[in-house]
Length: 194
Image 1 (cartoon, rainbow, N blue to C red):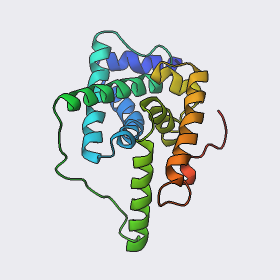
Image 2 (image 1 turned 120 degrees about the vertical axis):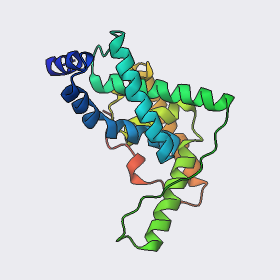
Image 3 (image 1 turned 30 degrees about the horizontal axis):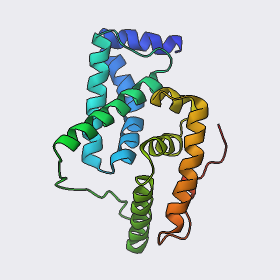
Image 4 (image 1 turned 90 degrees about the vertical axis):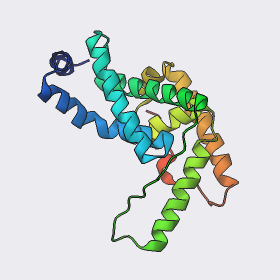
């Protein structure tokens, strides 16, 4: 952890509004995007993002905070929040009342439908992967994290993350090749093995 991050966490533990705002403004969009990719529901992702930052405050109160990277620590909290939510939903299923679609007004309706269908197909395909493969694919390509960062978040070695990534991409290609899409979107294909 950098000295700047350590100081920011120290200030956050003291409930300095500027430090808390800086942490939230810097990391909330990333955490929300990660959670949205996992659950595919904007309202639920917002709730999980809020829960993640509440858990961060609780951890700071207990002096349980990041040892390496503030970002990795927050992703780990988000991952644990997601696991807790999945367990809770398994015990008591919840139905979404509304799924909002946000789209720019200047987009052509045909392209909106095509993009939506492709995105839904990709989400369905990703959710057919094993839990570990899905988490690695979303963190690596959806969030743009490196293999070591993903390993810290998921509690796995870098080699295990790379193996899960390879198997996940192979399985994702197989799933997408048997679907109506002709090829997987370029956003999930790795350009380097960082």
